[in-house]
Length: 274
Image 1 (tube, rainbow, N blue to C red):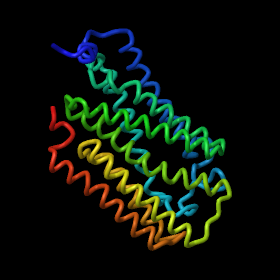
Image 2 (cartoon, one colour):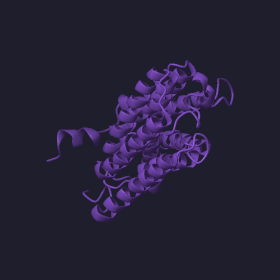
Image 3 (cartoon, helix red, strand yellow):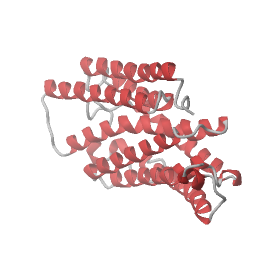
Image 4 (cartoon, one colour):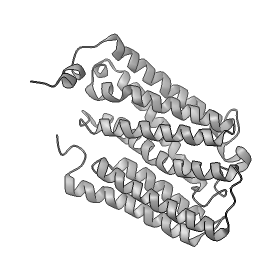
């Protein structure tokens, strides 16, 4: 006999299903449009210029170099693709969409809120918002692991996009917190700043390991986190320079990607249990 939760997930379409589909679509569009505000492409100030440049590449030792942020284009494109895919009538009662749709919509809206909070230069509020976003994305990936995708398109648009999203937000949370400290006037000596950067990047490596184990070797989160860490290393070859931080960032990237590949090879991937 099917469990009550499984019966609910496979039952006929309801008004809530249509509401979920529409909400995901609107949220993805809103999140993408608000991103233009944060990028300064249309209106607003570029993120690296707000709060006296506290979020700029050269503001802290854990900030990634500028090209790293190109991953947002991939994530936003994926979110829009995901939103269109899940809007199809055949997806209305899809169990995975029922389990994750509202959370995916929340992630897009929380990200939009982060952009607006940063534009207002409320950096500690932005830390709280990005931590909330990180928590929501963890929920999404854990729930996606419950059932395998039914098509290659779903695997790329949903699992791939949300995995990249989670991995990138992990490194963004680190950079955001460091920026808030700088904006608050926290000033460290060069040696202290280097020590803290190495410690924080070590924690990032630990997060990469936890993601690998907890998500059964999903590659997308590891790729995005390793991408961000690699660009932290690149940034530390310029201003402000730090060989120790650059080396630790590379090590963290290797640990992150290597652990995901190792777990995947040993367990068969996130859906080997199903």
